[in-house]
Image (cartoon, rainbow, N blue to C red; front, side, top):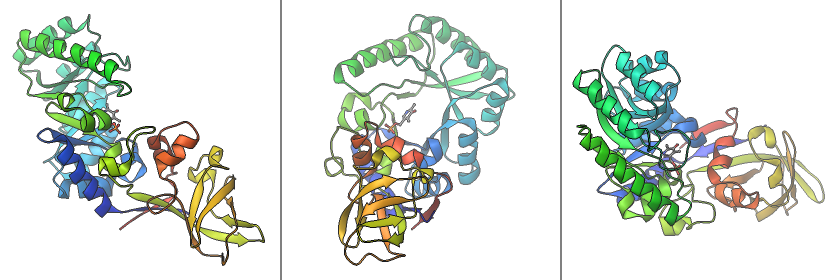
Length: 341
Ligand SMILES: *Cc1c(COP(=O)(O)O)cnc(C)c1O
């Protein structure tokens, strides 16, 4: 177990600038779920704040509270998974913005001590969470009533889309537009609309609205089967680096394996970066992997398994086994040290 994940915060800052250019004049909400896509929440949000990011998308209340603790009162922190009335109270106590996709959570938030800032979520077709279009008029009417009573403040309307095909996304956007009109007709005056994540945020003007919730591209993770990093103007910000532990005639063994988060199905596909160039990773065991030998290999040499400076990015690896780059990134085990530079 000699692996470490080297995180290059300057490369991250460059990606943030590329994101800002792509989505302006909309604002970038940096999505930091899953420990900032495996890069380490604390250092990522600290640097993002220093680079001018003012919105953080934190998924759950625990992560949102961690961002609040780290950065203090100034940033806006958005969460959209609130599991109970107790968590609703915690979210308001931590001054989080809350995404609300069902009528029960709306009532929980109305009942807390303090006034919740609410972003109402319309289900535009993903059926994950979100108020169904047929229930939306009733929910916005109730939200308007609770707002007039001073129990909540409705500041946004939002949704999440598949970003898999233009046609599906266009249909989702039509539902979103109708929901916005209905919210206003109910007397609500939210200021913020947000719909797009990385792919639509970069590619499609009319999906940006006021805020674009971007995770993947900020971490330099390009979409599987989509445009390349140079076209997007982004770079991988981390590298999984390990060391040689044994050398034989035709095999070099390194001290990292599937327990560190490398899917064993990458064996036979993945090429790692060595002092002599790319070398095929033939086998991935729990704690070690075997590579084709290269001239001059010695115990202790560094080998780049994935990411910045390696032959395969997270998405390159993902494409060989039929998944997405995010999944490879978030699998890097918590026991692998995050080394920031
Ligand atoms: C993960 C997530 C995002 C970010 O998506 P990327 O493709 O990584 O930019 C945005 N919104 C929601 C609701 C998410 O869950």
